[in-house]
Amino acid sequence: SYELTQPPSVSVSPGQTARITCSGDALPKKYAYWYQQKSGQAPVLVIYEDSKRPSGIPERFSGSSSGTMATLTISGAQVEDEADYYCYSTDSSGNHSGVFGGGTKLTVL
Amino acid sequence: EVQLLESGGGLVQPGGSLRLSCAASGFTFSNYAMSWVRQAPGKGLEWVSAFSGRGGSTYYADSVKGRFTISRDNSKNTLYLQMNSLRAEDTAIYYCAKEQQLVRDFYFDYWGQGTLVTVSS
Image 1 (cartoon, rainbow over the protein chains, first blue to last red):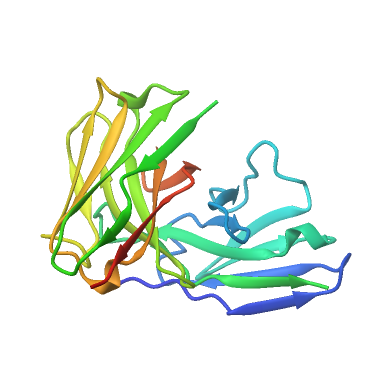
Image 2: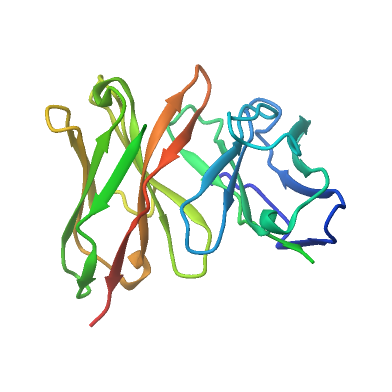
């Protein structure tokens, strides 16, 4: 089955740039999406179609994708950005099947 | 404003059944595919099942195929998940999510707050 691989944790100080990666064999052909999930809350879409930002998401959130790796970048991370981040994509089999990465715990302190 | 409200979770014994509901509002429900996504305690997200907007097609993760059935009632703006032969590993928060479908992808733009299903004797 298709898998997306993320680092379990990333830690930065406030104001620094946080980068979270997501690797998957189908990413050259499929978009990557990123979800933020704060403790006890439902996930929130922060990046769609590799690099687009939904309305209401701060400009410090950006996304990129090259080859088999997608990256979520938080420029000038804030304490309130501390959360779990999940990448998401669909597999390339043609089936309607969604896959999440294992999640990355971002610590900002 | 899009709202998704799940209900129907609870404690059930292994082998038992449960039906989840998701009441939708704030958008034209029949125009959109909908999914269920779950999250086991302390674990990551797992896509479970989807129902297309108009075509009536259904899709399942291998982990639930043959045990879970997704359905929808467009007249009631409600999505359902019938869960049978439940196992301990089905214990999770179950989220209802609205899909955005592209030519080559689909993703979730809105999520409910989830309903907790606990499978235990």
